[in-house]
Each structure stands twice: as C-alpha cells, then as structure tokens.
Image 1 (cartoon, rainbow, N blue to C red):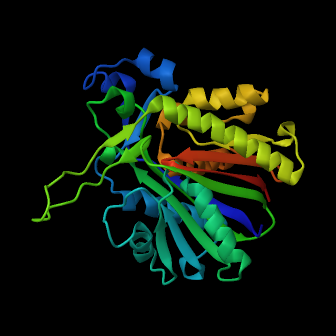
Image 2 (spheres, rainbow, N blue to C red; image 1 turned 30 degrees about the vertical axis):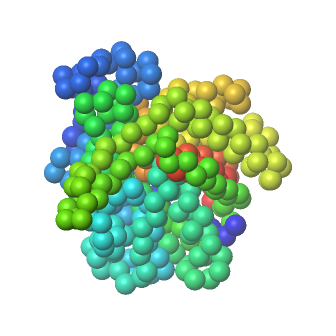
Length: 317
C-alpha cells in the first residue's frame, strides 16, 4: 500500500429533479420512492456534458491538493460512458487541463472508484507516477428509461475526483468480480451497420432483488476479509463510506455491524445513485464539512454491474 489522498473535488449538475417532479412523468410518488430507496431528489444534466462535470471536479481536486496539471503522472477516469466512444473521457479532461501525461478510462461500473484506487496504488508503488488524478464521472440520465419507475427513480448525474500521491494512508484494498452480466446491464446496440439490424442504444435494466442480495453479500465479504487482514474490529472504523445505491442497503449493513448512524454518512437522499462517482462525491462533502480528521479510519465498499465489487481501508493523513 503506497498512497494517500491529498485533494478532492466534486461537481453536480444544476438541475434538481424531485420525487414530485418524477411523479408527473411516471407512475410513482414521493412516498413510494422514499420507502424503497431513501431518495428524495437527484441532479440531472441538461446543459452540462459529462466532460464539464469531470473537468470541474478535477480542477477542485488539483487546487485542494496544491497540484499542477503538468505534475500529474496519470489521469484515470472511471465512467460507464463518456461524451464520446473514443477518445476517452480522461483524454477530454486532460485536453482542458493542458496535461501531457498518460490518460485512460476504466469501466468497473459502480465499483470504479475502488478499482481506480487499485490502479493508482499499483502505478505509484512501482514508481511509474508520483501523482495521479482519479476522476469518477457518470451521466446516468443518458441510460435511464424514464418510463420504468423501478429504475428511473434511482439514478443521478455527477462527478467526484481526488489526487493520489505517495503515502501510507491506504492500509487495505480488495477487488473482485463475480462475472455475471444478466442482473444489471446497459445494452449498447450495434449502431447503423448495413450488415445487421439497427438496434438503438439500450436502457439500463436491473433485477433489483438480485442486486440487493449481491450488495449485502459483497459488503459482508468485504468487511470480514478486511478486518481479518489488518487485525481490526468493526468498531475500530471511524466512518463507513458505502456506495450510495439505496438507503435500505446502507441501513442493512449498519444494522449487521451494530454500529451507530453517524458512522454511515449518506448523500443518496439528495443525489440518488451516481454509480462510481458516489463515494468520491461523499468523501469530498465530508472533507469540506471538516467531518474527517487526521488518523480517522475509513472503510470504503462498493458493488456494481459485472458483477464487480471492492473495498478499501484508509487511515486519513
């Protein structure tokens, strides 16, 4: 383990869509959504591009860490889809930053921040980079079927970023993939090829019950492996930053560990599920509100389509 996070940033679209507004376009209600998800509203892109969100989050992270773009060794962007099929979102952000370092995208769905930390740790520990910019940016509204009340109420748009440098903050990191593509997916279609049927870009499809089951199983696996590996008890963790997919999943995890509410901060109620951006946005909020102190132990855990999952333990420096 070779890194520490020295700066964070985040950016949300301007438009807020409340549960009441959603109830005007799909058969649902504020009560129905809150009871099943804990979500009250979400931010949705109207004028902003995903590159806009990613760039602003990146600028904030660089400024808070005191890092210049020319000092970056890599730019890693976690996203399920940027403004272009190619070039990558990382290249688009690098262009705006006038950066010349290697830049690439990573798609591990909602687990993307943990996977990106894993990549950054590998690059820093092998001395291929001193400073790495991680950006998690998602525009879930592009893949949402706004006639499907079981999924359209869940997601929002946004970006979170951080700068990683050499350090001893990262105490544990674990990733895995169950390799199941049927439970949660977005079909891309096959474009306009004259040699096949023209299938339009698909919407997000999800088996909610199976996703819930996988999420809680993954969390229990993560916490057991992590605590055993670094010889800690669940009470030794000061804060649990879980993927903000559904308040019920977070409450289930807290109840299983018998830990107090204040150890499980959330923002799902106001932003919904922003895929891989949810944890870094939450981290940025907590830091800006001075709720994380030097020496605090943070447990990060995420799960996503694939089925990917991962966790990390950070001792804040």
